[in-house]
Image 1 (tube, rainbow, N blue to C red):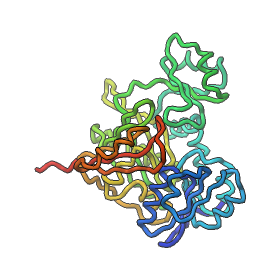
Image 2: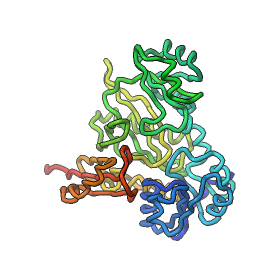
Image 3: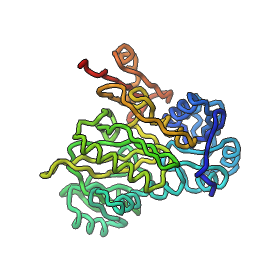
Image 4: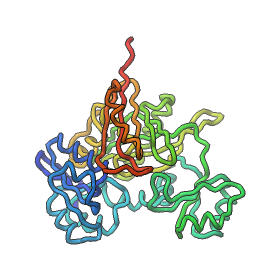
Length: 368
């Protein structure tokens, strides 16, 4: 395993990015502004990140020769998605520093391992249970109750690989439909709102968190994010503290997102951790136009061994709206909206449920 503790890039050095989606595209654009080059590795020839870099590698993640050549051309490697194949990460890690450390993926790629990790830190989550069969699912339901959410342990995002179970549902059919041998059952959380914290951590241990963000999902896909979330200051501080604690416990280098539920209880609201995303995150896109430093620049700074920025929100409220599917065809209507900035990802023809771009709106501070 390469030594990641002493990475110190200089302008002109090259960052390798695994994954060619919009997150890789925005990482490469942030790096370019800092005088750093990027090379993107992706098996998809239509990757939007290819459009903004000089050098790209289009090959499968199982292509060891292509991985080795890619590693030879870069100084440090990062990734824009968390489901990086373990074998590919192992090949690369033997040749160049990989940040965040590939070992972190062993925790965050498995929902059960992730929940166990968070729980051992003394941080609250929804009640959960390991499920490997119909019989163990029935036992978990008897213990946790209904409604509950059954999720595959690996490879789920934007609502994929999960199902809500309610009273009267055919348990055997639900299990069969999920088509997995390893799952996790989570108690359904009657939350007041969904929030996330985007945190950046440097190799020195320094952590900087952005304002807590409130998120609204439609059809399991993030639609709108608002910063700051309309929650009490004490609760926002608790959420940032949780994200910092998780980043430090993982010995993380780079940007990660911690998604949480805000619960309303008799003793006041509290937060439970839902998921960790070991990468830049959709709910942090508002930082591109709404903060003094974006989540993408923070990630580049961290993996380059540069000092982190101190995030300062530009407006009183910053809103990010995802343009999903055919909504991208109406991009022109946003171009004349005061305070709005349009981002189009260059993904070609829109498809239902596909994130095609986003719009950031910054509301200036009110006059005192």
